[in-house]
Length: 304
Image (cartoon, rainbow, N blue to C red):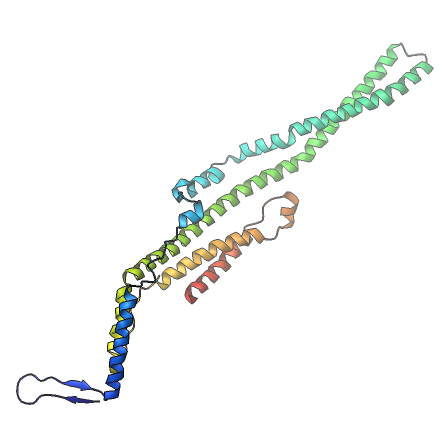
């Protein structure tokens, strides 16, 4: 490597020279880079990218989130707007005083009538003939006593049946409230997952559009680096950045928490109380699932 310059007064120009074989190889390299640049500039690899439509994936073609109830509307409809006393009254009426209960009582009454006609009355009539009291008032009183016993027995059956159904009505009421709570919770998790996914997909769509627009400059950036190769220039290639670290961490946490909560609610083991009453699983599984999902989401965001 050497340099040469002009003498005397006035401006001077210095030329940095390298060994002839180095300059020759560098010239060949630049010619190759130039040829590749001409080809590469006209072949944008991002030109055929089609934007991902998040709304179509979540809601179907032609729909957006505004076509569905808001989270506050769902909360008002299934939580704050629910009259739990009126709900209990309705559930109690549907369970304890249902047509099925009335049909069971009627069936029991018919069975009692058949037993009286086939067993009680024949024995009573035979006994009355033996006592020569068949046509007397004694026979009427005896039949009245049989009917009285039947009415009391039927009333006892009715009371026991309805009393047995009261815990069932309580369990149905509890299940209804838990279902409302779970529905609102799942709705909120879906909305959280939607917004976090939309942020990620929009970031990808915008990044791809920017890379397509800047593709010629990206290619020229490599040629610029090639020109300074002999000078040992540590010039880094300019590229279109994606989301910031904070943005990726937040998005990863939201996505992970949403999916973790869904999975946690699905696989949470039922407790003994749940098994006895038929109520929904507790929110504990969803909470641990959300926490684990958030951690995994943050880890994935920082890794990729």
